[in-house]
Image 1 (cartoon, rainbow, N blue to C red):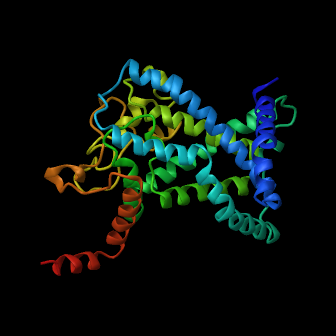
Image 2 (image 1 turned 135 degrees about the vertical axis):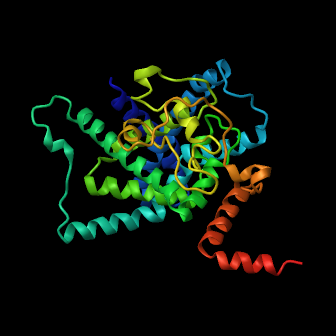
Length: 332
């Protein structure tokens, strides 16, 4: 049995044994299809957590970049990871934005938008699914690179993305530490892309699962690189830690500047092509320059809800700077 067949059977078994009876009990029989899709995300998340707790945790213990001294901050990152990897965030999207995007793309199809799929481009290929998966993976990674650069390029978007970069104790749990609005924007872009280019649902789940697992490794607190050649083929923990470095990963041109380096999620080729790669910097402290006392000690929040709230406050202050100055002037 190949891995895809194994996953399909496991998903069906989990759905029939656990989720389907629960949905009938709660009167949710009308949305069983969404429940089945949610079961797939749940199973993927459980498999990812198993890899993280065994392989990635062993790597962090083997050769850490720095000692973990702020375990409370790491626990908050674990909350983010569980919310995303167990499908809770995806479930909210199922019932809110996904129907909207389905309707939008459906209307565009009626208006003449052609249906496109790479599967039909490979006549005679034995394993078309594997070839198309590889193409979709490269396409989605390029779009992810472009979105990541935009998160650092546009000041309003950076106010949200800064929640991710404000972690001073980066570990394998830090990948999903994002502002929820930031996640909605990014995930919506990928859902729309998947609908437009015709990615099969199973392949979309696999693409997201592969990307998330590599991202968890790239955020891990481990002194690890992939060698002269491998470092240019797949994002390593060393390569990505430079992206999170204070004064390098965002403000490489100086205090208050937009930009950064090492934006790639999976394949560093994009950074090489667009000259945003820094290959040889040693791993150092992570965070944002304005968190430091000598640069204003800006507060990004300690807990989950504090980080979400302050992210919105920082966004509002960026969009309406006059209100911020007026509020400051009225303080005693």
